[in-house]
Image (tube, rainbow, N blue to C red):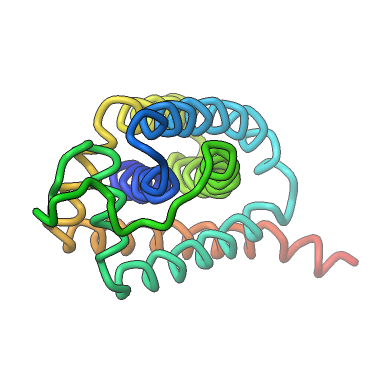
Length: 201
């Protein structure tokens, strides 16, 4: 559920950044975005498994995931017209039948779109890795499976997932609850981990 929701969220962000580009540049921006997301997830995963061993970072990761939940909640409550532009850019089809593909999106250059995608990918990849690492706990095989699935969903099914989450909003809410649970669990375990050190000082 974490991978499904966050891959869909990442796809929407990439689609939004690419929506303001001419048709011939749009596909390049989307490919760059998906490749960057995959590379960043692998890089963050290698670092996160080590970092979460440091006392206090599990708690910090849980608090960061709470912020991710708040951000997702706000996005779910917003108007969906921007999401429609993103889905049109991802699928190269006129989903809202207005005669244009992502025609309402503000215009931008390939460099602007690529920079937006990379900045968003850094945040989204860290969010995804933290959530998956928190859910996997001390099971490295589960962590690897979660990240491989995340990269596969981003690379192969980004448009499908974005459409699915647009049509069935309840899936996104279920994913949000799962991430909230993982955040709470990380905060609880991180607090227990920190207490002996606080008490001993």
